Picture 1 (tube, rainbow, N blue to C red):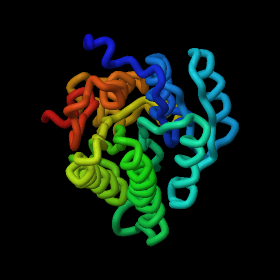
Picture 2 (cartoon, rainbow, N blue to C red):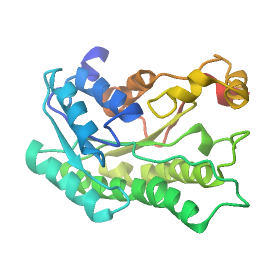
Picture 3 (cartoon, helix red, strand yellow):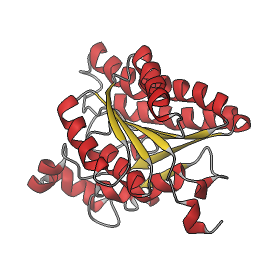
Picture 4 (cartoon, rainbow, N blue to C red):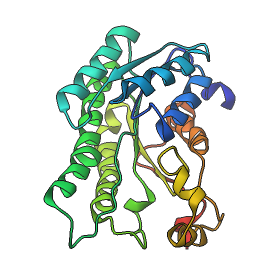
Length: 258
């Protein structure tokens, strides 16, 4: 098999949580371009259906499923429905998450718990549900989306809840990779840097001291674009990465090299 053939995703099925927009959408489109059928799992039905329509134009099958990843029953039923309709589950991009800037001294218990309920608990619920299916089917690829915030402590914003939650995702990835390798399940994580998405576009366009500091600390001097994650997502989802598990892949314009 040639290297290009290993990137071919025809006949495979992937679920992308939080895939209705932003980074999740970009990665979903990347896999779809390679021939992968895509299930978008999200809590925003209108945006989700728009993304599903866009994916179908690429000539693959796609469906949207409402899923709150902080609810383990939702996670299990979403993946079970995927297998029921598409016949298999090859890839899960565990992308859904939230970011909050909360100063540690003023942070409420609710603000702390909300970030952990989604970023840590939700990531595990999806991974566990996927792992149970993949263990029976012969394996698969789980791609958790963490952040450079799980590797370094960002400045100047206060976000100990977000930073520590993404560090947990990184270590969760390594732990699951070691435990599930014998089952044929590969678990890796992509750690993006500062990215220009629908949620952050206005902030980057407006600029200001905080944005200027971020860009000065990024060797490439600019934020990343969502489609710049598509290549690494396709690599980790495809047979091109069959000896890759437990990896942390920083896509950050060089931010963490200093």
